[in-house]
Length: 231
Image (cartoon, rainbow, N blue to C red; front, side, top):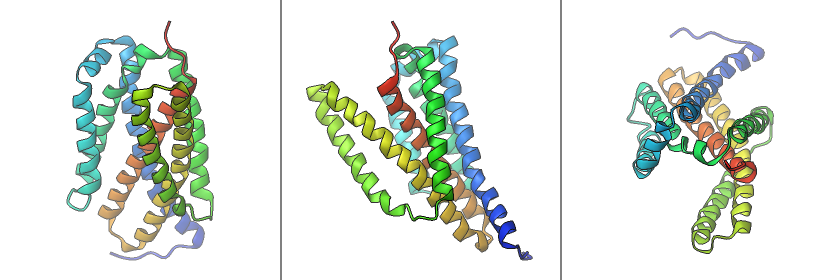
């Protein structure tokens, strides 16, 4: 393959186009997911079906997510893209019962707020020259703590603990948006000169999955804090 030499500005532009691939796939996933959520407003049977097969959806999401991350070296980029779309569909079904719990205004307004917060943090992660990867271990520790507290609260059912977990969740996944964005940028920048488009495509789709999960969790925790229940 003939190698072309770029100026620093041109090189930054070429790499940014590769990074935009992750955002494009993330956006596609979110469109699919929230297409099902808002579709349930007009076709309630979608939410009813999702409620009935709740545990099947949970198991399916776990299987698909682990397949993408653990088999990344064995699966092609096309297969990873197919699994990502499948994950987005399953998540859309999984979230559709939210339309029975929260009013339409809450879902829409918090979705917009989540997009604004996520976009701001992701932009920071993309532009900053500070190394954010050191925060990853602390974020993971916070996630473990949130899981333990959630299990604890299933028994005690404390509203205060639930609110604390939700606030912590917003902070964790907002920071994750910046950390994961920087991770994608660094990974693609390092791989760019390899000329291996297949590996770059894989990094794009796994990066899209991470950003997608960050956004969904940010949305759900904000909904738990600010969402208004249906009367």
